Amino acid sequence: MNERKTIRIAGAQGFYGDSPMAALAIAMESGADYLMHDALAELTLSILQKDKLKDPALGYARDIELHAKTLYPLAFSKGIRIVTNSGGLNPESAAGKVKAQLEKLGIKGIRIATITGDDFLNRLPELEAAGHLLENLDNGEPYFPAKYPVTHANVYTGAQAVKEALDQGANLILAGRVADPCLALGILAHEFGWKIDDASTQEDWDRLASGITIGHILECGGQASGGNSYAEWPMNYPVSNLGYPIAHVQEDGSAIITKLDSQGGKVSRNTVREQLVYEIHDPANYITPDVIVDLTQIEVTDIAENQVSVRNVKGKPRPEKLKLTIGQMEGYTTDQFFFFSWPNAYDKLKMFEKAAREIWTKLPVRIDEARFNIIGVNGLHEEAAPEVSAEELNQRSELGLRIAIKHRDDRTGKTAVQGIVCLGLNGPPGVISVPGWGNVNRAMLSLWPTLIPRSFVQPEVKVIVTGD
Image (cartoon, rainbow, N blue to C red; front, side):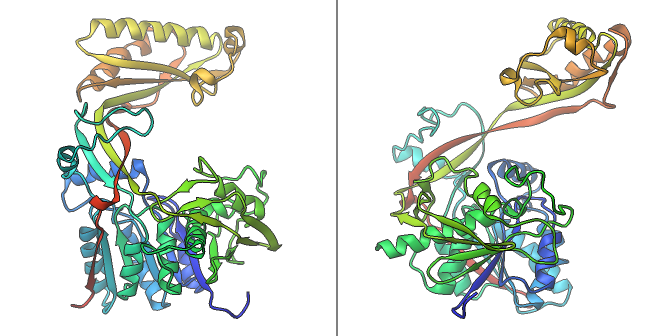
């Protein structure tokens, strides 16, 4: 590292429910200036909406309740600031929860910022009235008239509000649907005075693109430091205490990605490149709210053990529209697992399947779709899985069958499972099921991705202080 100003940002969380141990280790060793927690994904917003429907005070990533008792006090005592989108669908309620917990611990003077303005659940009629069809990005179909009840609708917002919150002295940011890599870009724009909304030169766009790239490397936590790696397979390093990635960033946007020496994992050109291509459809045009990133000229270089240099990222002007994701309630799914033993495991399984289908035709239920997948054969890849002969499958010591059904109401699932439980005695020999009724009547939430003009979106920053 040279003597120029360097900002250290740690990727402290890759998803809602991720282990806090790596972040605690970083805070204990004062290994970063900022902890960046990425808690949101499209599925996560659906989970949070389920919570909010049960209790309007919920809707945030509830692991912040644990962090407020353990990680946050430690980080604040070390002067470390925390930026997260764990506020989810209810940032202000999340802030109130954290404030109360910190005050219970006697911690005063902590500035907690919320970022809202991404929630469009009640603004869809406004978009319709303005003539926006909200065409689906995958198939071009218009959203209106909606086919299913809406559960949530959130816009991916950018880094400007993160910068503003830090400019106002926030020690902790609990944001809504700020796009994952924009969390890091907001930190860097605050520290280095980078232009975001008023970016106008190639130098501006390159810096923003570098900040987004760093955020993208960090956003999945341990995935950039040796976790989940094919590039480093067979992963000959400890993973039970995987050290999460830490970016040492300079004002020109160049960075060195590393981790704590005391922790497991590995940071290499392989792990960083592996993360770089994760969820990137077009390396020349990675579209984010603040800048379009061109990764085709990036330089990723091993410079020492667990130290990787990242530089030469190029940027293009930001898009004029922002992504809006609308959650939809499409019905319910129910699934259950059954296992069949040798001999003739496959023949038994097929007899069971045939009987189940026949029973369902006699029950007062409506099943829209049924799937029967053999674990270890086509459980993951379904129709794309290579064919295996019945003769070979009959020689297996055991076969697992997952039955999954899609249905419209919240009663069909239990009725359908109850209807086939009798096959445990009435059907083929050598069959057992997972105890209980399986996963019954789980809400099936789908997503409608679309674009809206950014003029509709106005993020808002609010700050509360512990002890006030």
